[in-house]
Image 1 (cartoon, rainbow, N blue to C red):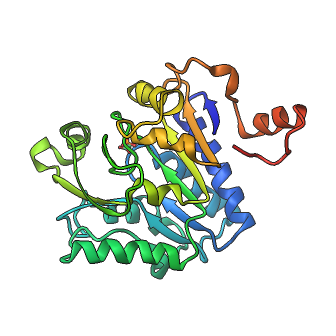
Image 2 (image 1 turned 90 degrees about the horizontal axis):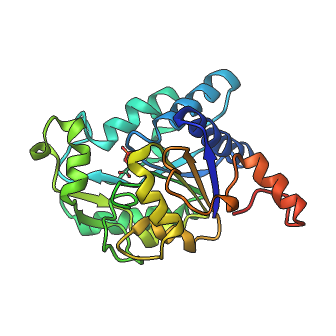
Length: 269
Ligand code: PGA
């Protein structure tokens, strides 16, 4: 894991944007895994800026979103389809045919989940998967006690997750009870992971995920098993980490540190 601690949300978002842009410049037909929620919004703003100001090209990119609420049609203002369109896709030159988001209205859910997994496989697999983390340590909608080898499926949302997301729906009763989500096994097959977290409210989840034992009770702790995981967080989200001597302030600093210790000079994790 490469843990990078930035000053604040904006700074975290810019650093994440640099990483994604670098990968995209290197591979224009990048297979990009995307996340929803408040955390990646700054990264998305940064990608939109890079597209507008520097012509960062998304025309050959294929995207796969992590999850979607069961029972919300794509046009519902709180659906993740709507979120992605409003906050990212409509501002970029992504080809609509290359966008994939689980269908919350699928009638045969099991067949749809299998199709989603197959669609990921057919593209050759996700190159870089963006992830947030829940205050309870979930990644995507893999709630605590999810199987660490799980695949795309339906999950029941915990009360904490529904309460955390009630701010978007007006009340907790309106938050759907189920979601379709990539499994932890699915996520772990991405070639690189980019986990973002900002704010005090994520500090305990980040401590447990980065420094705690690997456990299904903290699904995000599974990133410790990934060969190329980047954890870019702000100071507040890092405030409970104890082993800060192992972490860096930037991707650039990490490269220099590794060069000085005779390790390969490309950014690794
Ligand atoms: P947030 O959600 O970015 O809105 O905090 C993250 C998550 O629940 O995975």
